Structures are given as structure tokens and as C-alpha cells.
Length: 223
Image (cartoon, rainbow, N blue to C red; front, side, top):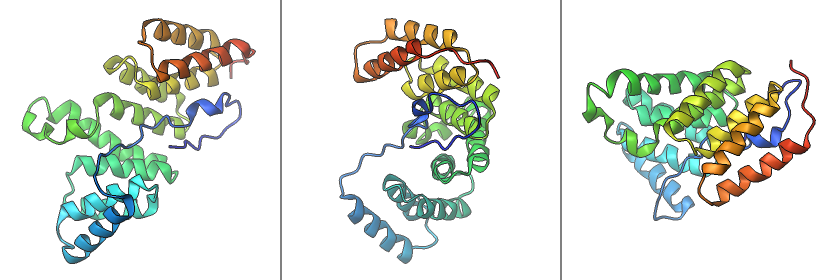
């Protein structure tokens, strides 16, 4: 997923590509067949929630973000408290550059995590299987980054890492924020500590490459 961050002083822009957790949904059908299926079901059952929701997911997986937005908005018009729909609508909006609205929906989902689920665990069903708390915090952070609120972006990337220390998107996001603020030494230390404790993997190799890049780059002035 591509972040569209702009602004003077932004460095290592390549780090922010794919910071927003990519939606992953296992399915057995070919993409276009699935879209055709749910388009037909949604047309025949316009007042049912699941066809519109599944159609939105199918569009989302094909990067057809405007159509995904339309289907997921329809889902929420039929079921306003469907938090999985809010989460994935935020992804579509994010990719369309609507960071503030995406953030609004993600904050509503965060409210569910903090204030509802501890008291009503039955409402957790389906939500926890769709995305993790670390994913949620990472995506909130990426929206804050999109609106150039680096302080809040850092706060939420760190929240994500408290839930999952090796969350690759949150690591790269936090490194990007630190680099933008000229805190290169801190970014290098974070990467070194993470790489030291991280099991061997392609993700670890990716972080090693970022570390080499940071070590070879002059430390910019603080803004």
C-alpha cells in the first residue's frame, strides 16, 4: 500500500511504502470471479449486509479503492456498528488519500478495543480474527503520518510495537518518523536492537538493508 506523504524535510521516503498493513484475506476463487459473484449477490439482495461487505473486500484486494469505498459505505449504512467494515473502509479511504476520514473510522474501532471488548468479550468474535491490535495501532499511526502529525504517529507506532515488537510495518513507520525528525542515531539504535533479537527472516533482511542505508546517510538537521 502506498503512502502519499509530502512535505519539506521528508527523507528516506522509500521506507514508508507499505507501512499501512496490507489487507490479507484468504479465498478460493479467482479474483474477478469473486467480484462477479458478490456483485450479483449484492444486486439480488441489496438489503443484506454480507454481500456488500464481501464485495467491498473483493474490490479492496484488487486495489479498486473507489468501488471498495462505495460497497463498504453501503455495508455501514445497513449495519452502522460493523467494526470490521469500518476498519477496511479506512484502508480504502487511506489509499484514496482521505487520511482524516480514515483516521476517524480507525479511532472508532480503537474505542471498541479499549472500552467495549474488555466488558463484552462476545463482541470480539470476528474482529480479532480480521486484524490484530498491533495492526490497528499501526494503521492509526500511518494515518497520523499522512496528515503530518508526527508526534501522534510516533505514539501509535510505539503502541503497535508494544503489542508486537517485530511488527514490520510499525518498525519501518517509526524509523521513518525518527528519520524525518533528524533522530538518525535513535533510529539506528532501534534497528540494531530489533535486528539483534529478531529471528532470521526476509523481514529481518529488509531491516538490515534499511540499517545500512541509515548508517551511510548524513544526519539531517532537526526541523
